Amino acid sequence: MSAATSPETQTPSSGLGDRIRQLLELVRFSHTVFALPFALLSAAIAWFRPDTVFLWQDLVGILLCMVFARSAAMAFNRLVDARIDAGNPRTAERHIPAGILSAKSVALFTIVCSAAFIGSTLIFLPKQLPIILSVPVLLFLLSYSYAKRLTVWCHYWLSTALMLSPIAAWIAVRDEFAIVPALLGLVIFFWVGGFDIIYACQDADFDRDSKLFSVPSRWGIKGALRIALVSHILTIAALFGLWHFAGFGTIFLVGVVAVSALLIYEHSLVSPDNLTRVNIAFFNVNTAVSFGLLAFGVADLMITT
Figure 1 (tube, rainbow, N blue to C red):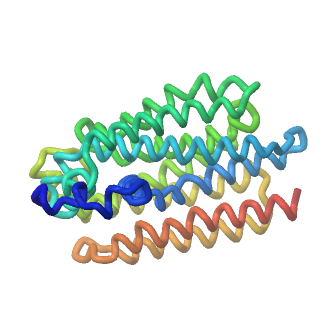
Figure 2: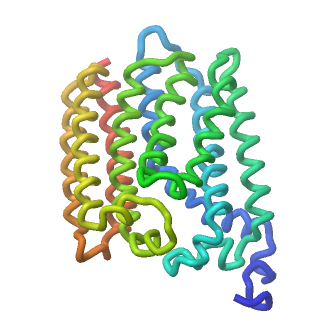
C-alpha cells in the first residue's frame, strides 16, 4: 500500500473518533467477551459469600482492569508480530502491516493501556494484593507475544494469561487466593487452549514454513484437532468440578450441560479437510460459552443463595 493511498494519510482517518475506532479494531475489542464474563462470574461468586460486601468500586475496577490489560496485551502482540503478520496472507491487512496505524502509535497505545491497568488497581485500595500483583501479571500477559517463537504449546501460554482473569477478579473482591476461582481458571485454561489450537489450524503451513511453533505446525491439522478435543473434554471435566466445589445448584448444572453440548458442536464445525467455519467456531460458539456460563452462574447464585 503506497503512502498516497494509505489510510494513515487520509483525512477521514485523521480524526480522533476514527483513530479510536482503528485502535479498538486493532485489539479486537469485541473479543473481550471471552474472558470478561469469567471475571464477572468469579466476582459474583465472591459477592454472594455471606462475609463479602458488594462494592460498586470493585465492579468498576474489575471492568477497567480487564479492558486495559487485554488492550495492552493485544496491542503489544500486534506490535511484536507486525513483520510476521505482513508475511501471512491471512493477516497482511492488519493495521500495522497495512499502514492503517503506525508502529509508534500502537506502541504509545500499549504504554497508555499498561499504565491505565496498573493505575486502575488503585481503585481496590485498601486491598494490597491487586496493586502488588499488577506489574507481574502485566508482564506475563505481554510475554505471550513471544510464545510462538519459544514453544509448541504457545496456545496454553495464552490460556494461562486468560485464566488469570477470574483469579484476579476474586483477589480484587476478597484480597485472597482460593480454590473456586482457581477451578474457574482451569476451565479457561483448557477451553481457550483448545479453541486457540483450532484457530491456529488456519496458519499451520505458514507457521511451519516460518519456523514458528504451534500444535498444528508440529502435529498437523488432524493431530491438532484431536488435541483440541482432548482439551475441551478436560474443560467439561473442570466445569463439573467447579459446579461441585463452588456449591452451585441445578441451574448451573444445566448450564454446564449446555456448554458441554456447545463444545461438542464446535468440533463438528471443523475437520482436517474443511476449516471454512473456523471463525464461527471461534467467535460465535465461544461467545455463547462465556456469556452462557455467566448467565447460568448468576441465576443460580440469585436463586439458591
